[in-house]
Length: 238
Image: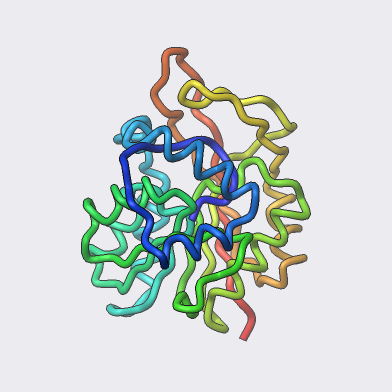
């Protein structure tokens, strides 16, 4: 499921009755995000091809913490690459969720060993989701207010078993600003490392660390500078 954030993806897909129920459970923000990501299709994945080393390093560390067969939820899984695919390659039981059925269609084709569900983190969670040993949500919270950010973390925690890991990644921004992304503009919220720690505490999570990594920007017509990414490693209290 995509929370709210940069745009994404295409492809004609028939929504099943089950998918239709999931669509009805979406928030208005989720519906808007789905519309944007449906339009981008594989362009979303290709824009970051070979530019997610920090992200794949973080996911690799997560896999070393988990026993084979552990249940992992990838929130905002998009096309399934690289994160869902990387988790599956380590023998984990992976479910991916996203608000875009088009993105999920690409994910099902590219990572057939995972399970994919149409869902909105801020909407009504499908009953079949359950809870997970670890929940990852990478670069989905970029345009959220503080209140929504904290609520999003609470919902991630609710999907995690007591003692389980929540891994969240966001871009560090010193002030709110308009960001151009794949031909679209969105309003990115301020997000500093102290903000992430504060939000995690309000959400009832135990923070292990907030790691700062340099992330290469996506391809685009206008060259841009690398940006700092913040990786929150936290646990749901036992």
